Length: 300
Image (cartoon, rainbow, N blue to C red; front, side, top):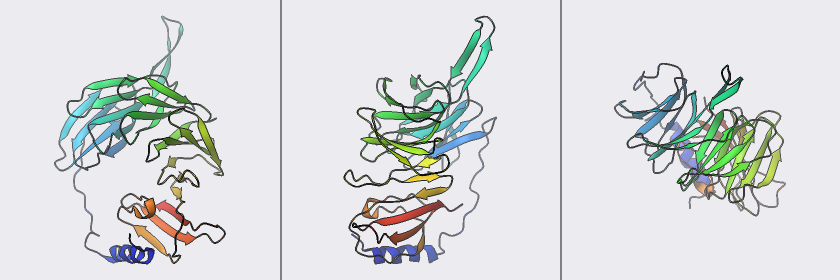
């Protein structure tokens, strides 16, 4: 395992290296007839998907820009999308919902607000998950690809069995819209962030809320789990473009500066994705355990 001073040195070296500093526009792909809502790469980076207000999702070849598939079936805006990485053979899409007055039935009728599971190889629709009352705005596969979580503007999240399409649990407890969620790396826990300014931790097997984190003064727009230590853990969360950090015991070195992380770092179990982040690291002197504290912010 690399020592912290050496890791610090290597990151600084990478920052000062100018070999890969020049970026250029590679391709412009125009296919959707209405604005895009989201995009996501598979683990290998050779394919990506886009969602749009035109109610479709498209699969693209990254290198050539070729459109491989158009996934049609939603009756409203396709807003949330994700691959089942690292396999990349399935895609999930979540859509908005619309209510209108049906004159013949003399009642309001709502359409879509569903999550769909698609086969990436042939574009076949495998399942449609129904249950949310309003828009689905966030979703994720668990690490094994066997379960899907969806978060909605109806203040709930739901867990679904990928194979059967069954709703396993409805996660009830937030008092406002759920706009972010993520599974823990072991798949046993899930976190949700909400407009009610809280983060909740849930047990996946039971659907029970284990803990609620409070402290933000605004909506939790993004959440990410880097590491779970069940005996002593903290939680990564973010509001707007700021990401709060946490959690590594038994660190012997405490000299850190402000670094830009341009690589995937898994040192001490903390995973930081490519680029886009800054980190300020410091030792918490008031803790009996040494903790690596990182405050991350998007570099845009």
